Image 1: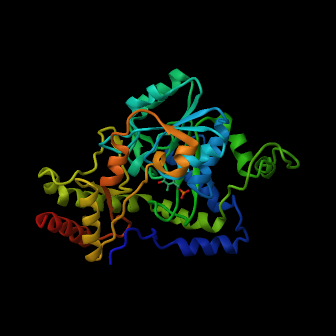
Image 2: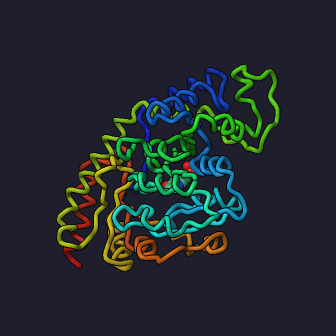
Image 3: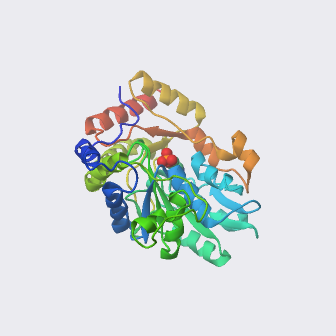
Length: 377
Ligand SMILES: *Cc1c(COP(=O)(O)O)cnc(C)c1O
């Protein structure tokens, strides 16, 4: 059986976790958390990166920092994971879903301006499959309308848009280190903060609304409750696991890209015959091979292909139920404009196995099976 995902493991994780335990520092913000924060800061150029317990909680923190509230509107794609939306629902904001582009499955930047009202406070581009949204256009719209940008870069660690790291372009960026992502700590994430002036408040929100971070740095002589917040710090043992992988980020990235390129090459003939569609990577974007997906003709063909692959020991999966058609979606928001590609993509997209350690033999076997399916169809 070829799994859809295998959590990444490079070899030093256990040693680093043992180090964290031996240092008698297993709660948040120990040496490994600081090393991970610094690695992200060096890689992306943001003022501050803070490890969090999930990308979902990094999004929650970003939503608090944007100060959205009831009556305010947030523009996001409907084709995304629920956490993108939940963070703003928890603040009482109204969601305005827009359609995606059929090539990258990212928010269609040309539809954003029409969705803006005088209540729009935030735009949330989601970098699907680690391929950057059209950020220059989005940042320009945001600037002209005085709107903040929170990048959901859960899938975008190590990806760039015009040479800039995903997650470092908007006001805030959110990474995921869940076990299904390229670099993992089991459950975890990070908040990236562009503006130095927002760092203090972010640290306070992450430390249960206290100024404990300042206290630990010796800036204040006692710590106290100064703002709203919660516990968004991951444990050192999780950070230790992650740091082992960040040290090997290029190895992991190159290996995933090799799998991705192998799929692309082997499946190209089917795309040229017009049987399937392959992912499109815009020239401005360098991606991280987070995902390899194909698009079939329709939902029926997708189901048949997924079943055929399963019979042959290959697990292929699909997502996302469009948020605007989910029960909570209609309660907390509305779809603006026409749904040309969101539902269509949900029905046709199939994700193939993709993980660190997937072998070329496996990508070849999977590609051959897909070709066999289409030969007999
Ligand atoms: C994985 C993912 C999340 C959530 O990440 P967690 O770390 O599991 O909270 C949010 N948004 C997108 C687009 C994701 O892919």
